[in-house]
Length: 506
Image (tube, rainbow, N blue to C red; front, side, top):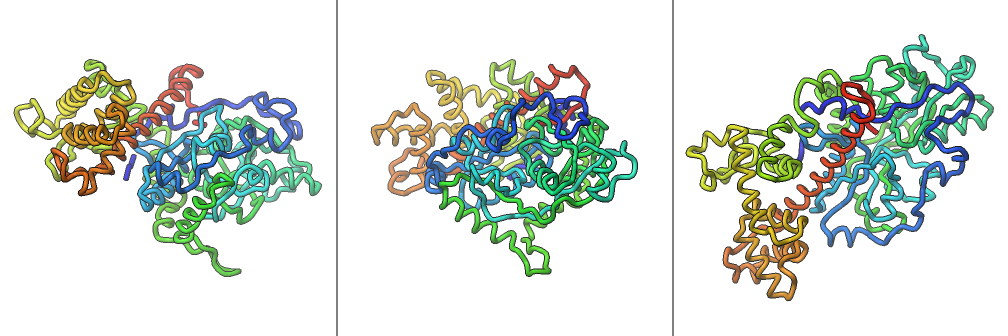
């Protein structure tokens, strides 16, 4: 549905530097508050009573909210569009259930369990292992993957230890997050008498960020699932695989404890893609799941190239290869450039040569009959197409200028997609039902009704495939929110580090 050019490495690999390597056993970094040693504190959970929002409410609303981290194996942007193993798998479920997928990227100071239980998201899809600690606060679906936990070493240690016992003998500290499943596995091993040195760092980090710091020699060892190591090893230099710490951990999606219907629907979907084999057999995976695994974790060198900091710097902006051009055109018209970028991503995936079955052409899919350019060929010029598309969207914004900003943009996007005639029909229908025609929620409901004969037979412009328009609006607004998050994090990183300094994106 949405695919992803070169996101600069300051974005791809942006984040916070860890503190100096600590050598004492069970030492804590400066990022971790003292006394952070209980399960609830370790997971930083504050919302323990989940709201009531099950599959029925999600279906009625038409939007499934996926909570995830921004990383190369869960969710990331390329050419302003979404990629990622978790993203594509959840998107497949949403598509089969006729739901729009809204992505909620976990911010540096946000807790995924709180986002889930407070209702800001419906499913955590972030390569999570089902652990007893996590199950105190959330429920889990059936698994969709099995992974092994590996010790991973910097090449600065020389020949990597072949066993956990050797790690103890050499006194190599293992750096992990306090809220990770790896931390609890290490504690398990310590309880069995292995005097491991554990360096605990901020929960803001993810596995990929720690691997990157291992590759730079910031830390000497960490723990990673084998699939994440395989993916990272394609573009990181200086990391070495060590011994297995745990075998066959089950990876699943986290959901609220009081959402049994959602769990049932997700389990049905996952059963079609992942099933356990016999005692000595490998799991059975669907063709689709095998394609995703190959793309993100196994072979897929073309995807690995996107993650490489050097190849990332070859061109393009933070959001797309057309950032500067979009900013110039949008700013001159007084229009938010990120919303323009979101429209382009939805319309053409930043393909300047796109042409629709209806004859719309170029980045913003401008119809020649609505253009002020003398010929269709000129609309394939990126700047001309952008100026025409922005002019048209600006006309719609001016048409609804008396509304508040959120409704104004929703109506303008709907008109850009379906035409002002269908939007006017929907507004008249809302009035007939004694609803405010200036509120997008009411008009979006009316657009859906215009798919039914008893409503569209009396409409001035007839049948409207309203579900497409409503989804178009919601997906653009969601993508806009994602772009804002990514841009904010990228700007914060530049301010913290200064230009040209690379880090890891949390």
